[in-house]
Amino acid sequence: MNTINRLFSLPTFVFTTLTLCSSLAFAEPVWIDVRTEGEYTQNHIEGDANIPMATFDPLQLATQFGKDAEINLYCQSGGRAGRAKEILEAAGFTNVSNVGGIDDVRELRDIARSSTVQ
Image 1 (cartoon, helix red, strand yellow):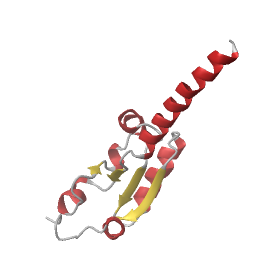
Image 2 (tube, helix red, strand yellow):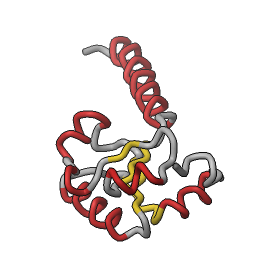
Image 3 (cartoon, helix red, strand yellow):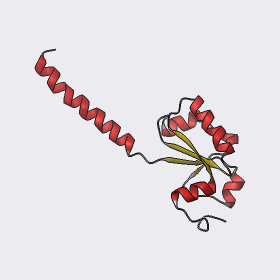
Image 4 (cartoon, one colour):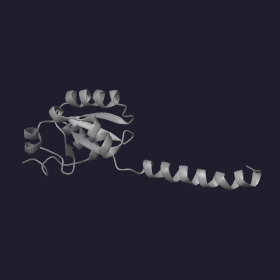
């Protein structure tokens, strides 16, 4: 490959890389409540996924979101979310956080409790 061809192929690579990186940087974080369906029904955050620990499947999550997606896990107090985080990290996920309990998430995201309690 001559020098001119190398110069013209570099910007395409750089542009493609920057486009991919910027689309990853602006992806919405995934919020997953790992409590039971009953707990979720009584009190949940609208729009967040409910995937109870009993049905937690890293392969399904990898297919749905990818292993590099920002995934935020929570439960009632943080214990189950911590176990879910360990499962995902063992499966190769790279950007997983245990954000604690549902009240911690409401405070972190500035969400009123009364709007989603049933």
